[in-house]
Image (cartoon, rainbow, N blue to C red; front, side, top):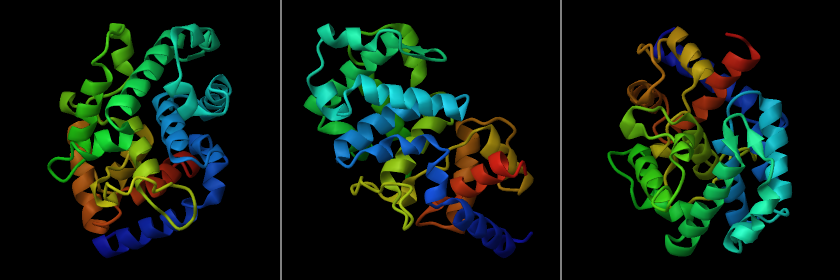
Length: 254
């Protein structure tokens, strides 16, 4: 396919998958349970953090997080004390356990009390027409309190050559506004043009087959390469192609 044909093909796949039906089988359904901005972004951040492995398991544990937080994520983190740690007992998703969750809640409380929330923290650290440096700064701030070293592995760092798939997915949820009600678009201070397409084994393999990506590893350098090509196809909304690449890989075994 030439570039015009490739864009038409991918745009058609975005239309096919970027709709309300997508929500039913995707972890994004968990933040869709809420209306309040802070509730959406807090539970969205936590669900994105555990979004690896079996999707049904991710959704099940996302619902468990909602239960733990009494259906009020923002209120729960603001008022959390160590006495409330008992509510976290037994939570585990793969290698993310109750001790990790305990620290994540403490760190989120710190960010909302002293850094004006997640959106502000990401927005004030934009650099080089990208949000990857913002992710790096988020991680530094997030782990600025006393914590177990093991918990750091649950937030990736692009400056250490990670593609940071889960945080880029979270940022797509928060920043990108579509007309079909899938992505939320509640972070108005960040432009969708700065978003990166979440890069994982599925999107990476499809991107290589389509000639959008040549680097073999799914790392930060590959993400930069994919960014450069998707932003040519759509400078204003490059991350919309996540729906096409993911859909082709997961649903069509492309």
